Length: 556
Image 1 (spheres, one colour):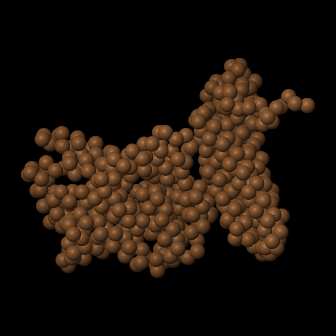
Image 2 (cartoon, one colour; image 1 turned 45 degrees about the horizontal axis):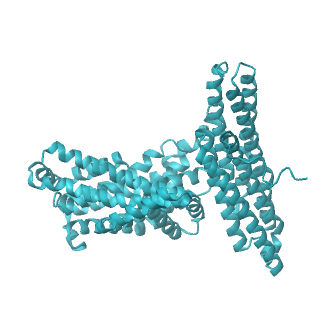
Image 3 (cartoon, rainbow, N blue to C red; image 1 turned 180 degrees about the vertical axis):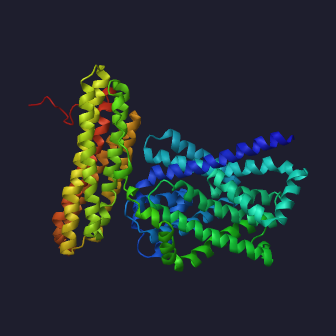
């Protein structure tokens, strides 16, 4: 087979592997995104538990980078301390190594089963969660299929002269192999895919262990580089997590590489074959890094603070100060462009509201006055955006507009009003309750608190969906958003009824926080209802929205 054909097949199989990994991750995020974010936000009970939580989430997402970016977002919003974020990411790296271990087993017989089951779930069911689970199953099937294709595509290379000579050179030059592994991993943005490919090459005897081990060490460094690169536009506090993880991985991988240069490591003893030994080495490396790194979390937190001290002190860190408004006054005379401009500003306003909503439960549980005040101040930015959008659209409305443009202007104004109201609920109700709980030092019952966490997670999930609907105007997403409102209504009724039963049974914590529990549930439900309003105009135009929920609205 000609070399160009072999490389084409290899490139196609590699892209299928990258697509499959992304497919699994997106399926998990869409099906269980709120649960994952709740798990991440709750992982603050010691660095060991945080690392375990990071490993679990990375296994579900099949990506340590995804966990790192989630942790960065929570740290930027003040939900996670930097030290906890570092522990989470160390655990996430171990979780992704476990994923590689599982996927490297000979599971070829599962491919048709996974494709069949995943296809049925994704294509034949209408429930969103079921379809996303089907996406996850399909993704795992495609991962296994792509690994088989990579093995088939590279098999002819064993008989050529180029690859064995290149592999021989890399086996002699550890540093070049190490840097090549880091660069390749960073380029494809997936350490899982990179290490699976190296293991597949080793199984085909295309790459000796002397070259494969430095490639895997480089892939571990490259995995740290990915998150560091993706976080470069975030706040300094958020950047400290991938920076600390990158330092950990750089020191560990270089130390292991130096050990290889001076000592004959018994890598072959780690498995029955080269690929097995390589994957086990990768797993042991990450497990050792977690054990060695956790005691130095506090020191790394201080080090990254010193390294990014200048950025931390910069007054431009606050997005309310350094973000320029999206309202473009130069296009006011062109309604189509002006409405697009107002939509972008409305999205920005929604992001401010999300920053307020996301840490509410942490503030209700153990928020300090300073943290509560910081979140409450964001409401000023929400109010300012609300005023700016209304005045801007009022000026646009004075021009000549089509019927559709006039309707869209009204829709944007209405949603701006609703987002401003949602911000007020957080600032004037939920944060007031957080202050009250702090003053009284009262505690919620474990069952009641769990129910409130579920309500909050549902609101955060629906906020993402509502902002997507705002931009995309997608009819299926709008339908899903309204269905989520009904789900939220049932959840709120469920927690209300269970709370009353706890009061009747005399649960001390429920009696102590009875008023708070009901008000928090009511506030979260109201915020959710305000978010859902963005879907109503879309469903009205399509004829999917009833004029009344009454079975017979004309009955007197």
